[in-house]
Length: 515
Image 1 (cartoon, rainbow, N blue to C red):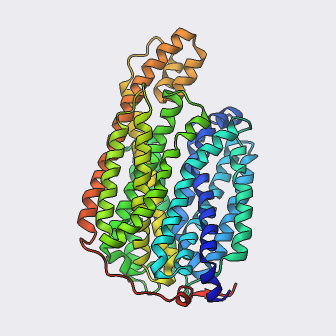
Image 2 (image 1 turned 120 degrees about the vertical axis):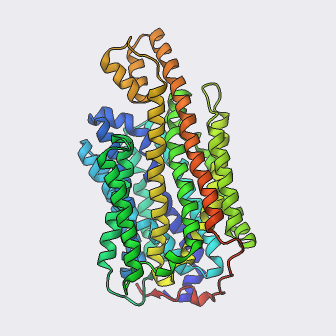
Image 3 (image 1 turned 45 degrees about the horizontal axis):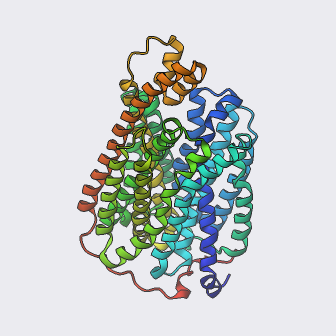
């Protein structure tokens, strides 16, 4: 495909990439509302349910850097289409899984596909668009990612109102078919023109480090944060990631340029993005339970109440423009300060009104749009063009690790303070008491088997405990966001970064190769 043709089609190419990203966003969140039916139909245990959710995150987070590096070496379009086809096949398989083990396997395969798709979308943007349009294109990319946050639960809730649980996985099938066809027709192939040999030690260190780190985060709330396996996973993950950074700074053919690790712009942007995603996934984990169990809404009504996060679309447009005028630091600091306010506001959500929760989601969406696009642009700018896939993968890995740790930490605080907030439940049989103390979902299942008066009394007890736990967990997120404000103030440059050199349209596709 000729450079001039690519330049003319760049906005249509962006639409295809955004569609691919929406699929990944939906896959990551759509299952949450279907878990009760999965448990009932497949006879899944609590541990099975956790791995049905976490298997996707483990594969996705662990393989992101590998997916980005393979795209740089073998072709980003090729990796994008390969990833979409994996998502297509494993989504169809998940819809008709007949056992918990089969569903876990299918979800793992979907995570592998996502790890190929997500870095490819961002690196193709970097290659197709001229430098002066990167920020604008990345704003659209981030906005499409935000659309997947409420869209997955809304569509999932709508299907669950009428069909079996597996139908939530079939949403991706027609969308992916359209995306694959459009990619084949519109998206140009690009790769690292130097074609250096594959950095095998870097691949091993990055995959093992990210996988181990995400695994430790997953096991934290399950086994306890002082459990030897949890500590070993987190400690070994951090050590392997540190070893990866050291190796990349010494090797002659790194997956990532050494200049990325020396850049305060890179470090500050990564911290800001980590904090956003940490709070996002932690908030979604808590607020979906709040809408269903405290406010009594069904799956569809709960999904619709996530729509306020679409303020991210407005924030994305504003954040890009402000960063161009004032520099990244004021935008990141202001955005994270609003994030602190959003999480603090959510602590006031109670049984009487859900208004604070809806306002908090709207503020959060605006913050996400304000901060993520300029930070993603800064991360990509810190890497040479030939390593666009690997740099994109670093961006995505920052988001994924932040999200995994957000669910783990905030979920752990929620579970612990919920149990501590419950009164003596000696009036219940031992098995029922265990279920009530395990989670509010277990408490609701026990209440459904009790008489009306007993159910109402039990609901009041567990609701009070959950609302108190919700406040503690949201204060935890606010604390992380506040730490992010301080870190960004310290790390990011205090003035506008020097403008990047202008790039002619023909140069925007200088690494494009004939498919």
